[in-house]
Image (cartoon, rainbow, N blue to C red):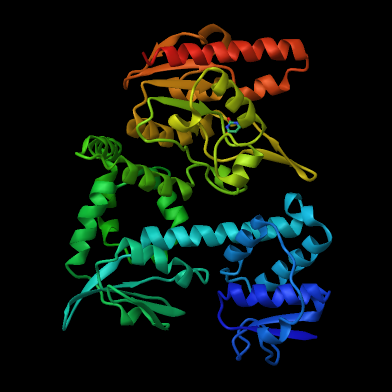
Length: 461
Ligand code: URA
């Protein structure tokens, strides 16, 4: 039995070095015990150092494995190191193992990684500083209880976001301290070590009132998504009732202000919006999906394309239209002389809906409720980008955009004015072209699709 002792709960480098050497010497997963710290906090056993296991060569693994491992290592699950090692050993024998999306081990690891990412987001969204006067002015102190070992991995975010403040983040496992120039870490703390209410709460209330996002509250998502333990850290929860009324209008106003501001800070508003969408739980599609696939492209694009929902590859990549339908889209856009890098591309529904059939994830059409739940995001994207022309690719996009059921054949190829400004153009979805069995018909329909895109582009003047 080999025992590998990692230095910290989130010791990715230690795990990687040890795992690489153990795999190179064909050590079976069941012969290894992974533990953290000399006191064997994760598992039992006597200590050996990762260095002891690093003898031997290495081999290369796909980037997707490394990314997965970086997240999984941060999880609270005591089995995480062993599970990752199991997958690593498999990858040595089967280099394509990362593509086997139905494999239970890979699925389990991806679920763990997703929960870790969600926890990272929660810390960024829900952590609150309180002001604590000290000898040199003010230090800002926050208490946070993460579910996973994410605190160190999240440190750079807080350093960048609050670079000019002196702050401490206290958590049960570790504390971080930033003095405006250097980051240090200390032992874990308790809630009692953090200050209670103070003037900063007023600052947060004002901040929250201005960025308030009704998406969180509308369907009780705030309560569902955010464990109660976070609520007590948040002064602005006192405001929620009062903010719900008219929140949508205020949010839209905020987006418009952001867009109109001198020098325009719509990029920042877009980033905030996308970050919010990453934690969206407005409908149940977020559960099986890997991640939210938000729109992308310049925030001042004159043209926006709206697809239906991400497919299998988009779900994994986190980007719209990168799979087979994306390739058809790219060809058509190029044939219509449209530069994809200058248009904004998004989807009506931001999570991949699928049915698992054996190893394959088969696309499933989003329902009216899912389209409706996701409309909030696309409305915000449209308020920010304010495209002159929005091209709806297929019936789902058209329905989301126009708020009614649309028959493509009847409405394609002409401008439809939108109440909020700009115009919509309706055309087919690229997947429709992929599904046509007859090559001649495929070619004809592709040419028609390109004509629709050209007409929409011509409307830009
Ligand atoms: N189909 C869509 O509608 N959107 C994508 O992003 C990919 C496939």
